[in-house]
Length: 144
Length: 144
DNA sequence: TCTTGACTTAGAGCCAGCTCTAACTTGTAG
DNA sequence: CTACAAGTTAGAGCTGGCTCTAAGTCAAGA
Image (spheres, rainbow over the protein chains, first blue to last red):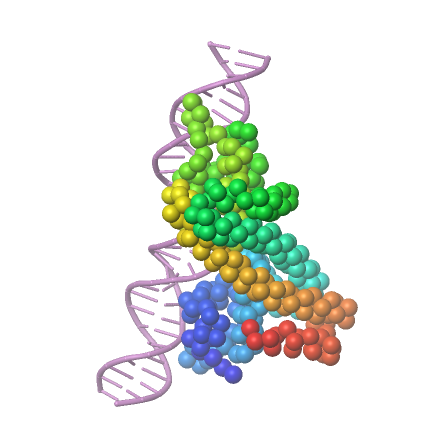
């Protein structure tokens, strides 16, 4: 129920250095300290860290995450701002997923190409393969 | 068929600074220069840049991309290495997609929650909603 | 000829996000 | 009582990936 910084680090996969850095950057205003000055992380705090990881993972810079956390502390007056932020992040995430899907197709083509090239011992010969030529066209001419 | 660095920048969405930086880092060993020392990018070179963008996009650091480009120049002796690299990147990409999918669920939950909160004018009240409680449980208890 | 704009180089500077160091305190086990 | 592990702070340093500056070259148009 109360974790030291080291235990919190283990639970989240971050380092103690990073946790202190996040606190310094205003990302952890909720973490308490005990009578001898040690940080005490609650399960709730771990939940916050997981949300931070999520927002970081979808590409938000730390200062924007901090903004969101500040809005939380300001209370219900910022509900619309927070809703809009999540909607925006959903958009970003959808774009990202679309982009990664395109990269996946390109990489799949490369795997096909190199598999054939390894079999033949020659990339130039593999590129003569009609199926691979057709696949390449499909992947590369998809306007993007 | 032959583009100046400025034209190549426009075509790829990179800056001329970045293109020169990439060359310095060994990512563009194929780009030629004309008699007066100006870089001339071919359509093929633009294709290389698009592949670099793809590899960067799936999270490869520039030095690893450079490694791949070096293998290309070494010829058919490195075909297996290149195949394995693409297989590895496919794995990474699949993991990334799975991770982003989880983030999407979390964000969708937040959008639902904040939509209700805005409607009620209170986050605390929205969190009392039974459907949202159930959704939260589903999203957050999915072990990860 | 002069100006303009796009190019060239070497190298410095910038930013985000950590990552580490030094010097010190605290709590527990032997 | 001492040793040790784990915590504390302020602040310096590192890495990746650009981003910009200075000083100069070059080609085409007025």
